[in-house]
Amino acid sequence: MKSPNERRRFVLRAAAGFAALVTAGCERLSRSEWFPKVLAVGESLSSGAQHLISPRKSMAQEFSEADLSPQFRSNGTSMPNDPGYQALAANAFAGWALQVDGLVANPLKLTLAELRTMPARTQITRHDCVEGWSAIGKWTGVPLHEVLALAKPQPNARFAVFHCADPMEEDGSHKYYESIDMDDAYHPQTMLAYDLNGATLPVANGAPIRLRVERQLGYKMAKYVMRIELVESFAHIAGGKGGYWEDEGYEWYAGI
Ligand SMILES: Nc1nc2c(c(=O)[nH]1)N[C@H]1C(S)=C(S)[C@@H](COP(=O)(O)O)O[C@H]1N2
Ligand SMILES: [Mo]
Image (cartoon, rainbow, N blue to C red; front, side):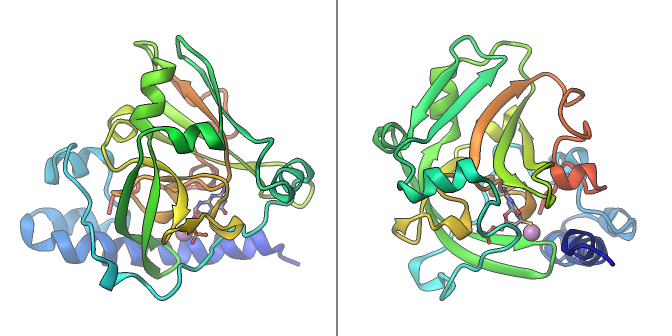
């Protein structure tokens, strides 16, 4: 019998090619003659192709309150199957702290209260999941560049890795993780969100904080972030591909 995760993997793989066509294709098709050739491969944009089309500093589209989806659904994990996480959640994350380490001059531990006193940003954006749904939500959080300014990445830091609380296998192994490069890490819309639609981020959507990296697909938006590790390569982490789904064959750069 297939486990729920195996079934999800199958559905996700089947959906990925089509969703990449829809999400990447419709908006960009007219911009370049050669683009359909890229699409024909059935993959989302590689980071190189994305850079040719939209400059690295470009902003993802932002929307108005009137555009908000009636509700922002939960996908993937909705309650991490981890006793440590559940104990923190039961206490409104009072004992939680975000760890920032790896290739940084100044390793950090930031409580939720500390993150909430840092400069904040609010943005209304559209989330696109490869499983074939989208939702518009209002996110408030601390821009990741503010956290990096405190941690001071070393010159050889090339990626930020987000280690999550939720195990993806029933035996508690294979925790979800994701990664982005430093361009996306310093992008003005990249944030650690603690509020959704003006209220505390629900557990189902990644409490206490989840990543928003607005120019990429939903699976990049790590929920239940416990630790941010600055690295030069992914070789020492899990399957070495930079993310839980990437280790299963997904594109690392999921440009939309
Ligand atoms: N830790 C963690 N992050 C995750 C996931 C997950 O299962 N665990 N699912 C991903 C996927 S595929 C999507 S589409 C979004 C869903 O976010 P939502 O639950 O707020 O809708 O979170 C992403 N981040
Ligand atoms: Mo997704």
